[in-house]
Amino acid sequence: MSEKDTGKKNASVVTRFAPSPTGFMHVGGVRTALFAWLWARKNNGIFILRIEDTDKEREVEGSIEHIIESLKWLGLDFDYGPEKDGPNAPYIQSERLEIYKKYAQTLIEKGFAYADPYTGDEVEKFRKAAEENKKPFLYREHRPKTFEVWDGAKPLRFKTPEIKSYKWNDLVQGDLSAGPEALDDFILIKSDGFPTYNFAHIVDDIEMQVTHVVRGQEFISSTPKYLSVYEALGVTPPLYASMPHIMATGGNKKLSKRDGAKDILDYKKEGYLAETMINYLAFLGFNPGGEREIFTPEELIKVFELNRIQRSGAKWNDEKLDWFNKEHIKLLPKEEIEKNILEWLPPEMKNPKIIPVILERISKWSDITNMVGAGELDFFFKAPEYAKEKLIYKNSSLEKITGNLKSAIKALESLSENNFTVENIKTELMKIADSLDNRGELLHPVRFALSGLDKSPDPFVIASILGKNETLSRLQKAIT
Image (cartoon, rainbow, N blue to C red):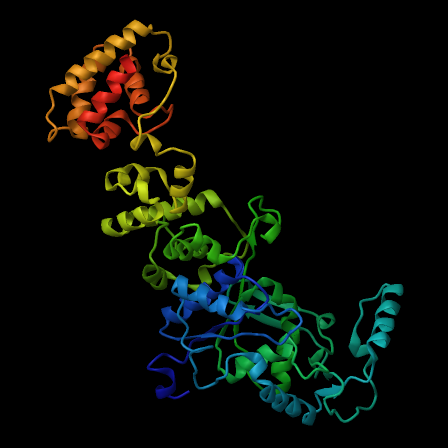
């Protein structure tokens, strides 16, 4: 690639995210994209989005748009890909068929590919015979002695150059190896003209000069096959970094839809911040060291290292995700917090005074909808209804509670409307509460009179939001 092609980026580090358009973006796939993006940005390199759509039977309409929308929401900008042509366009595999045929022809000419002479039924018979003999099925043991001319009507198979052991270093998993049993003749191009994943991704990584392949660890077992193709083509393979699985909350299996794995854009709908998802996903398998956990994307780029990714799986934890989101909300400018909270409130509740109360009790924006639905904010807008017994604190008498409420009214009446603040209200009421056998004999009935709830913000905050007149009205109502 020339300097002009790379846009002044460092072409010595090229990563890619290559999803199949077969449905929603799972958090595991997003984390793979994130780590590839972080490594490219860390090195001022190139990050490519490539759509691997050669399995047309599994393709789901709209998936490509969904993938792009997901990456855009998270801020994982790609340098080249669909909608961003580059020096190796197109970046959708179904539009690159001629390139795969060119590489296939090269392998044929080198003697490393041949037309598959067998029908599906014949291959199945070979497989069953291996099972009956309690042996692994290896297609190479049935390789024909002579090869037909490949005209595209039959599948094209790879002829393994040499049956041997392979050793390689994975930047995450360390030194790995596999014996000859991991090698076999596999299909390069199907009879429908589309390449298999095993072939297409290798061709594309060569053409796009990918230097680091960040991928899931499920591809480790197939690596010897990939290495044998690189060897046949005379090309040095890229460096591999195989990610550990994201595990379900129980920690004993890979996270799946059945365990609650969701579309990444569902988190957006629920009011999680993009910065939260990046921070949380990064920490599922990566740790820069130290106690600090909250990082912005820019800070993650600075500290990210492939060799600090752990080898074992990391557990998904919704509570931890909520904690991350709450911490990231705190980092937002005050104006943005207020704007978001008001947007999630129904028109009749858009009162800026209740923003601090809401902020204290949410971890994501959709919690506001839940609060509204549960009636937790209703008391701010209409006086609560309750049974008088609810005002009584533990074993206190109704007469004592009534007397305490009268004292509270008298104390609060001394405050002007302008001085009716949380601090002043608290000072006046605590003078009374501290003189009692138990503070709850005052604070409980005041809280209940103002909110009608067992659990609510403290009565000083509620009173300051309601204002002097409404507060005194509700306390008087409690007495009468």
